Length: 244
Image (cartoon, rainbow, N blue to C red; front, side, top):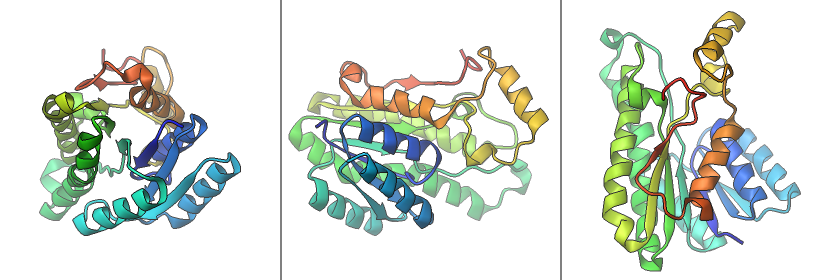
């Protein structure tokens, strides 16, 4: 058994793929969700059919009290969390001049504050144990910026800065902190993109394809496992070569 992983936003997309990948690799899986209850239950059913020790925990991870309650329940069920995957996130396409203050705040609450709260919650246990791994999900737009996605790009850039700074701070305590910055991936975020636009997105990448949630999950699992033992403070970007 590799330990216990807590994955936020695990009911769909990349989070779901991470839950399945960690489960297959022998981890106990604590899967967080907020609104997608049916999807979370389907994930739990699939994990249990695989004989994975798993459970789902509902919490708005931008709320400190709910994060604390979720962690308490997860640790009561599985013991100390040894890996945290901060995956929960939202996106928005909109002209910057049309973005409201409420939309800006919501973007940072979900994409950045949730990462802060969940990391703050698990770190004392990791530091005490002198081991632990945190993987934060950013985006290529956090590296390069995207037109009509200023709040999203800014929030994902914050994830990168958070990762690098925290890695320096907690490395001496045996805790590793890394970041995955995916390119275009087949998730709900591009569900509304039509066939022609989808082909154009694929053609932008030297590899000529759009990524899958499983592509990203494999990278996350690598960082959390023995393969990532000597890796911290890094941004790994599975993006098909769009950014090199």
